[in-house]
Length: 417
Ligand SMILES: *[C@@H]1O[C@H](CO)[C@@H](O)[C@H](O)[C@H]1NC(C)=O
Ligand SMILES: *[C@@H]1O[C@H](CO)[C@@H](O)[C@H](O)[C@H]1NC(C)=O
Ligand SMILES: *[C@@H]1O[C@H](CO)[C@@H](O)[C@H](O)[C@H]1NC(C)=O
Image (tube, rainbow, N blue to C red; front, side, top):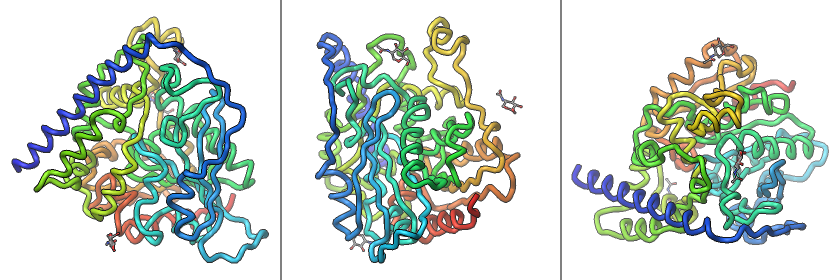
């Protein structure tokens, strides 16, 4: 118990450090020049996720870049076939897009052995797998004209992931494959999907969606991360001061984390617990690998938007707080809501949530399910995993048996339309 409190204190302290430091950085960078860099050709990376985490396991993998309508260059990894597959050009494969959550990137799907990682399992089961990486993460830090050192590069929240990132990835995959797409989202990857569907975006290209650890309502979120989000980000971002990279890794956090983790009697398993709930099924070597790659950057504006979601209990667009700013952006005093009742009732949805999840709290998920109560019964499949917390869904050593097999059965049970 004492250890737990100590950890809580540590997490608070280091997150506080992060907040203080980045506000300093932002202020400093405001005086810098706004250099504009023209990028013409986007070379394929040899040090990307394919090379480090897919090809090493004997799978084919292709690094792809797509450009969003607002100019961000996103990297995607395509795993077109299973490990021991005899190539057959005639076989039509179902594409599946995997969308990670906030403060991590596509690599989080690849932290275990090939037999345990969702992308590789899907490839072996005959799917054409596409791993997305949202703007700001390690391999998606480019823009046609803005440099990440320019605060304007970070002028976005999850609204822009709905408006630009997801459509760019969906359009690309749809054009390349000519097939309707299955989607797997985790955490923020579920929020942006639900928000999109509520605006009837993507639905014409979608075959079915699996939402793991869904977040739509965050009122009961109960972690240090949630508390810091709600309390520290005051939600006022009306000037350039609020535009900045939120980089937990480049700041003292990383050194601090390392120091904390190296302490006798404290291992990083506790830290994961602190941040995501009591994960039942993480291998400690997996957690170590995770901490080597994550956390990843996002924008401060995105964190503020998430904080608004926590505090306001409604799913709405970014709130500029000042009524005149909201009118300027939306033509109304309060930001428009994403009304989840508008999600097409016949859209096949698989939802899995965990009883120990501190970020996707059971009560919030039940609120979400209530919003979806008019959904066609045979198009909605809900799974509750009592012992699972947030990270078990992507890195649990038994996630294949408990969750992924059900996802695959669900995808296969949805007839071709
Ligand atoms: C940030 O984005 C908003 C909304 O797209 C826009 O109105 C605003 O002018 C942008 N701010 C800067 C500094 O570019
Ligand atoms: C945990 O990781 C180690 C080292 O990678 C591996 O040998 C072991 O099989 C893993 N345990 C489980 C249950 O996956
Ligand atoms: C959401 O949409 C439903 C059905 O269109 C409507 O009855 C409900 O009032 C809407 N909710 C809000 C908060 O606007």
